[in-house]
Image (tube, rainbow over all chains, first blue to last red):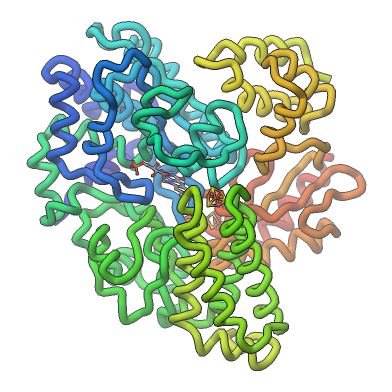
Amino acid sequence: MFTKILTRNFDQPDLHEMEVYEKLGGYRMIRQALRRHTPEEIVQMVQRSGLRGRGGAGFPTGIKWGFIPRNSDKPTYLCVNADESEPGTFKDRHIILHDPHQLLEGIMVSAYAIQSRRAFIYIRGEMAREAAILNDAIAQAEKKNYLGHRIFGEDFDLQIQVVRGAGAYICGEETGLLESIEGKRGQPRTKPPFPAVCGLYGCPTIINNVETLINVPHIVANGPEWFAAIGKDPRNTGPKLYGVSGQVKRPGVYEFDMTITLKELIYDVCGGLTENRALKGVIPGGSSVPILLPEEIDVAMDFDSLAARGTMLGSAGVVVIGEGTCMVRVARRVAQFYAFESCGQCPPCREGTAWLHKILQRIESGGGHPGELDLLAEICDNMKSHTICPLSDAAAMPIESYIRKYRAEFEEHLSRPGCACS
Amino acid sequence: MISAATKEKVEALASAFPQRRSGLMPALHLIQQESGYISPEATVFLSQVFELSRAQIHETITFYHMFRTRPAGRFIFQVCTNVSCMLRGSEEIMQTLSEILGIQPGETTPDGQFTLQETECLAACGAAPVVQLNEEYLEHVTCRQIRELIAELRKES
Ligand SMILES: Cc1cc2nc3c(=O)[nH]c(=O)nc-3n(C[C@H](O)[C@H](O)[C@H](O)COP(=O)(O)O)c2cc1C
Ligand code: SF4
Ligand code: FES
């Protein structure tokens, strides 16, 4: 039996109020971290916990933190990625809406570990209410000297500022995010240098996802061994949030360890499909990952099991698609997103995303030509691995998977105008 | 017109970050909130405060979908049409709005009251279909709810 860790208090009324959060044990873990542990100890604990980033790539958090140069004379920055713009993903917003102080505590412990005295929460522009909730929580914390000079009376200063984006998916990419905080166009930077060495304002910078950071205090409070034992697999440890949407009876954000299967998530947790439709396909980790067929869903929702199935855990945004949905339309809509959001720096991405959208639009409206499915596959192929950031791959991979797995349906669309699916 | 209060806040933003230019995005939000869009006059003001050329200011403005260089309607409806919302009937919502308002996505009603737009995933997919009305999220939206809401807003305007 899995007991909720990150979301255990989410149904408590007024959890965003300092008193409520503290009454439930909040801000104890940061005190413990500051009083009992050196920053290096916390970095090592996070390394031993096996925590992997929850923003999409699954990179081990402790290892990333270890890349920060020692004895640099520049300040270190912590940037919290609250851009949450990957279609199908809604877990970070859920965290901020319910429990902003838990995020602040996660930032405090993490900032202490990497010795960053200034942290920025980069939140997407559309989330005005969520930004206000965070600013309010920060003001409450400043008032109690939980933020500012010598926080909790200990020898550590910390300031947290909220920076709002303004509608650009690419600013969720970590170096696009840095450019945006610097007030520029959010175009990703060429790597190396990596942000841990040369990031915000040219200084060492760690970028982590909201969900990643709220795990950190629990690791410090309960020990890395406790965390590593959650989930039974040393490469996929700790609690995980899944956002399930689309045609299920009970969509929402759910917390489990990563042994839960996609099948259990859809049928046991979310009550199966609406109107008891048959399942047609599932996107397991946000719109950037390849789709799974109904016969492929008996798979653990962890990084490696999904990779073994040729897809990814990504942002763990599960989109459930029922029979009756036109896959050409799904493909066109996904292509439209990437064409709209490509930052345009790299020709394969700029041209490729535009072509995918244009051709799929044509096929959807019945004007496709024979041979265009192979052309689409070729375009996808050319978009991969020749670009500054992974957006180009992220656009190509899902489209490729739709065509491969629902080829007959695409061909049907080519052979006659109109849609036979609905 | 940028109010004196907003001007003061913008000037404070220029020194709120390790580098001046980081204040630009928050400043653009402030100005757009007050005036509904970023006017040429505002661009000149921002270029003075942030010690940047107007071209640099413009470069930032045009990169971000939320910033507008022209006024929009008083009520801006943004319908998420991305996959999770599409699976939950966002096309019908869009059609209903388009019919009632008599405009296509991307347009503003001639009286300047309503703007209709298609938007990307709003990170509220569990509550699909989702519509953003100005800054507010409307979740689990139905066509009926949309009709009632527009009737109300029309009375207000
Ligand atoms: C196009 C693109 C969009 C991304 N969007 C987000 C996002 O909205 N939120 C996020 O946390 N990570 C996003 N990422 C991943 C970040 O680049 C980065 O890997 C992550 O924030 C690191 O944090 P983590 O190690 O805690 O996961 C995106 C990546 C790409 C390529
Ligand atoms: S891959 Fe696309 S989004 Fe990424 S930097 Fe290149 S053009 Fe921009
Ligand atoms: S797809 Fe509409 S809110 Fe995510």
